[in-house]
Length: 161
Image 1 (cartoon, rainbow, N blue to C red):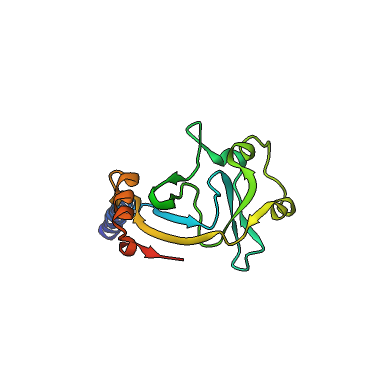
Image 2 (tube, one colour):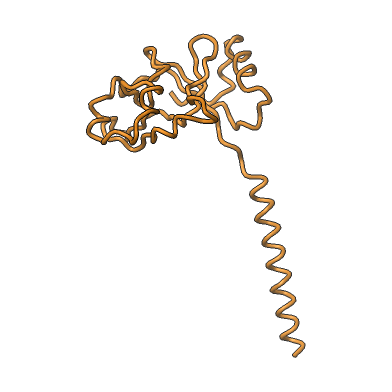
């Protein structure tokens, strides 16, 4: 009987401790990274999609409703010297299509993959792409990034391209 009680107490202790550890891990999990980039052309209003490494196959594209956050288009944030702060989740395999955010966001459903492929205007548009670290390290992202860009000190970021 004592053994059974001991086992139950140990199980309860372990489950409570595991729950606390899970909550602590969730609180300590890193925030998303932020990225800044420059492009070869003016793609500011154009919708980004993601390609496979072969720069041909489409691996990700937004639903029209994905382009609106808090009733505003989720355009990139313009920074100094032609840099943009990504607000969509691009990576080195980004491509831009002919449709503008305003046009795409009004569609009832996303275009078919073959149609999206025909709409690609640049499958290698990035000149530079930097990982600027976790979002939580900034109090005012736009202001702080612009200060760094203005000083020409992008070496503090991880250059991806």
